[in-house]
Length: 363
Image (cartoon, rainbow, N blue to C red):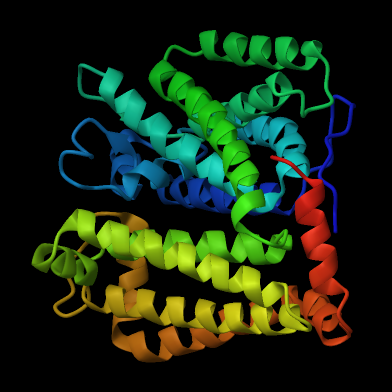
């Protein structure tokens, strides 16, 4: 099992989750720059692409709580945020692993937008990954306070100082998103530490990272589906809180079933293919939800989604099926090492995962 300990050096080589987030952010921002025909994007284009604005939460446009973090005003704005993602994200991902890193990043992005929205008293439009990257720095500070990060105080003094200096160098900095993301990252990291301590009492095994990341992504898909048209009709018939409780209980049950399977002989060889099947089903579910926006085709209001629906709607069944097969194949490919490890298991894998759980207390 890999051990996620932060290097005492100031710089750290980025890992998989950082590269994925960088790629998605650069592609999303670059798409806006291409549409604008330059190295910057006007406010109207950023708004139509998913930028966060004052009435977004009141109008239930929750997708903007995430979309805004992948958009940027210009190339300089994008470069500075990606530099912060590399400098800070590499340390955090190495220490907590990609699954918890993604959770911290997304929580800082979402709650940074929510807190920033609450602070604003006038109309505004904000974009950028600043809230999420500030959350990374907050999480690193949390680990340092807990004595679980092997870096010196100078790391925080230099990075926080540079962040403030860059922020003061621009007149359009959204301080609410910055501070909200920082606080959200710190609190989320502390809560994850408590979750890991509680897991020592509820779970037998330490999940391999591919299993942990996969379960995290599936949980995100379920959360998105809850806010889609089909799920909202179910919530109306019952109650939103009741549906939430059912989903949380179901997710906990799935995690425990995975835990029990991993503790068994050759369980790892069963869990990864099962997750591949679950991923394929999730893609089909998302395709079903998107099909509701196709007939008749109504613009959603976000340029990327509208362009996607133009291609998707006439071929929804074919595209959903191919995407499901592709996602399942990708999962099996990424998990090939763990599958082979499970196939060759003669009874030691579950024991090693249980030993890993007992050795690590908290993050």
